[in-house]
Image 1 (cartoon, rainbow, N blue to C red):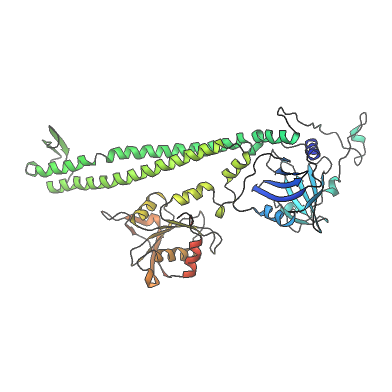
Image 2 (cartoon, one colour; image 1 turned 90 degrees about the vertical axis):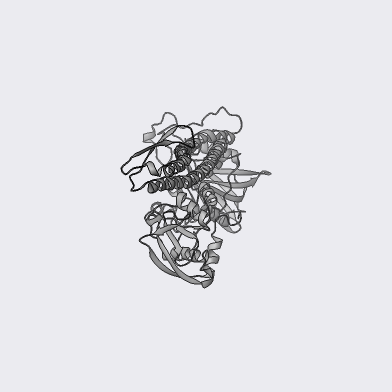
Length: 503
């Protein structure tokens, strides 16, 4: 429930904002901000929430989350009103619009806080109503730079008295009395303290989308499904592991067939012979091949495949178990958070580099090889991944890239596989292709040549080389591109490398 007009007046009367200095503007999300104020000998934190169903303004006594990179509106406020003084704080009539008059040096600003659940906003104007900026830019309302916002012209500058008892509100002068359409009262809360303290405690638990209850439901919805899917995948891998673990039996079959070449006749589908690995007689199905030697080789080949597959499956199980542990730890950490503002920021991932969430950034750092995010460079924000050796190339192919991702590799030199992660509905820009091409050539034996040809194709057009070494693939439907190594481009990419400081 959002604040009603009577509650807003009570909040303002307790705060006594006029005379306070604005020290800093903070913004943790698109619709949540705070002003750090100093007055009456101490610091105060004025919370402003535009969250639907929980629009409010009150002092908060809980920590406000810091962002790695300030959001747009907070930066604007810090450039204009920091070190300014609040000269007036009043609600316009009973319309849930608060006006703060701020003086900063010789400059004067009006800060309007509109607490309407379906159209909440914070708008900063010059004294003449010219809009300087808004927390939510709404062009249709004129609430963008260059627009005009002067709610006093519609609602007046102060409270409108209620219609006196015994007078028909419908017949009263609309400019003199406020019609009694709905009666609002200040809510009663069981918690002790000032009204601001009571609001802060109540909204922590019940503040709509910003309440701990709702946020924890979001956490559970997000993590329960992910944990269940990952656990199911691990179970399937363990079933495969058990199947592959029987690979030694295949080698034994080949040995027994070779020891009994003389008794196998053309057309036989089964061999019954002494099991010299274990006591007794064993019955082995014979593959439909021309000669017994080929039948034995068939089982040896199946043994090699199973042995290699077992190593891969075990590596996938190990990585999956680590991922599950990290997911469960993150889940527990989020559920243990008691500050809804901190929890909201963790869920939204605001202020992270390139707009990526903390979960995405952690996944980037755990991925094998090198990862580059190109946000802020020509071509836009793309993820480029480099495998530095056969093991990393193989791991990336198996677990970290998909069919529509782009693969690049130096044409005549051994070296790294480079992948460009596909973005739905987007074609890879030439500049990003050149970025990836430079990385592919730089991390190959052709680096010293300064230039070279590269293959590139989508991952779905790669096939593994039969009996080839780990990570070896054969491309189809490939295209060619000639690339010259550009030192300036590589330097810019190095600045975009994820986890640069940690490595």
